[in-house]
Amino acid sequence: MKKRIGVVGAGIAGLTCAYELQKAGFEVVVYEKEPHVGGRMSSRVKEDFIFDLGADHLCDLYDHMKEYCREFGIEWEKMRFLNYGVFRDGEIRSMTDAIGRLSKVRMAIQYMRTKDVGDFFNLNHLAIHDNDNAYDFMRRRTGKEVADYFVDSFSTTYQFHRAKEISLAAMFGIMKSIERDKDRWHLHRTRGGMQALPNALASRLDIRLSNPVHEVIAGDRVSVRDGKSETFDAVVLASQANASLRMLKNPTAKQRDLLSKTQYAASISVAFRVDRDKLPDTAIVWVPYVESRKISGYVNEAMKGEELVHGGKSLICAWLHEDFAREIMMKRDDEIFALVKQELVRVCPWFESVDEIESFDMQKWPEAMPKFAHGHLSRVKSFLEDGQGERNVFLCGDYMNSPWTEGALRGGQRTAERVTSRLLG
Image 1: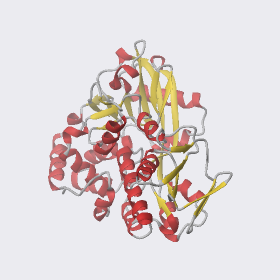
Image 2: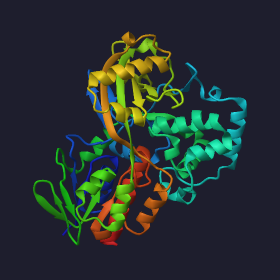
Image 3: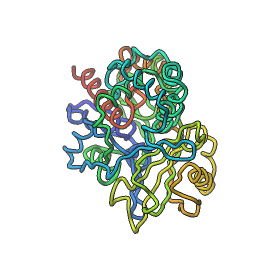
Image 4: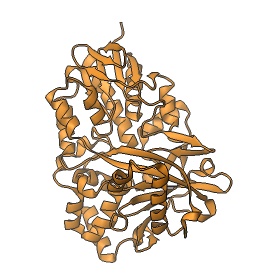
């Protein structure tokens, strides 16, 4: 008789874990509270535009994700153009012109001094360097200009929180990857939007949508209650850390410690419809916190090609700094659009007036990204070595030292391997 596994959460980590467990011979049931799969890797189609709600683009070094795309026949596309900019002093500058000559020299020296510390998509490899925060370290080594316009700006653009809340170890991993894999950081997408891969995985699984789990009770057999009660040989909690803690009614001390100490940054993704002719072929603009305490960066969605250009219009998507997002999260949508429009015109020279920007769509993310802060990497690594799978409950998700969509996907694969080893090994 097949062993039964329950997976709670149908984001990319949970879907990947469930798919690999099913291939290993388990009977798998996936619970998802939303009416769709994908979590922070999902899309919405509106007026012919595909609005990616969370993750907005992919990198060519996402090798495990590309393998699934080949398996399922999903087209992996290179963006139509790829130019980065940094907003500084009222203009968009190229990366090479964003800082002064002395800062460039200091940064180059630090690159040479940074060792190859391991795979950024598995931060367990880097935990030995989890002994400082990225901002303070880089300010000491390279100066305030590099810390503000590169280190802090990178963190706020892609994590939405300040670099004081990202571990030095994670920054080392990114720096060495950019140096080692420079040509593979080119941005890509899946045709049909971010939703394409989650949908393909879900179509091969037993998914129960609009099905929130109320309780998980660990033990020799794990009980899951979602209105009715089912039992499993093991359960994978692939939801966000605080949601997992709420559901798990009898956590071990180690599970409670990790879940309660995991923190997330908030953000809001705000999309505006604009004239395509207003948008130069600049893909992504970083907006450092020293330049704006509201918008952390914006993306020219026209880089995705014909699926994001209709009737001479395209989209520009702005992401908000954590503090500003929390400040306005409970406001009405029209109020949020108005506030973000005003700031976008200030930090985006492509537009002269809010009249050139049409409110289109938004997605609020109270828990957009886990904070891989100083101490978090070591805590997760310790848990995985001595705590994962206790009482037949396994934790899974990007916060488990598995950053970004590729990291979360690989984390799902690793969790499936642990479950298989535990139950069949």
